[in-house]
Length: 98
Image (cartoon, rainbow, N blue to C red; front, top):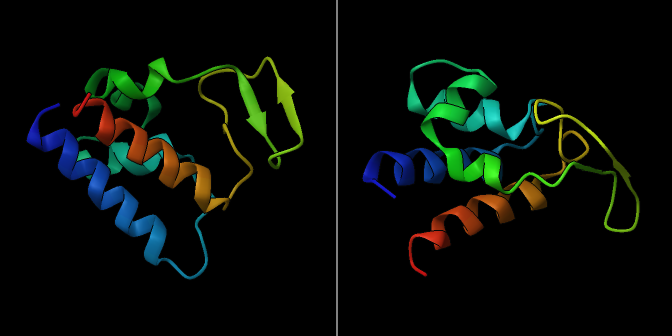
């Protein structure tokens, strides 16, 4: 993973952790916005394909409740749920170390 990708992920993580009232936007839009090239899922698919490889078609309401067969462009977790968003960023950052 190059430095630009790492930087975008770290800035997105910082934003998520420091916001008092989480914004209702998908993680892909948050990360794509950090690249400064746009704010769309398509931008992120091109810039950070590692993110899309983690998609499993599941929307999580909580740790115990989920829906299946969602589309890639949909939310993967309920809006404003910080923890899974931070965990997926950490996972992406650690892919480079394995």
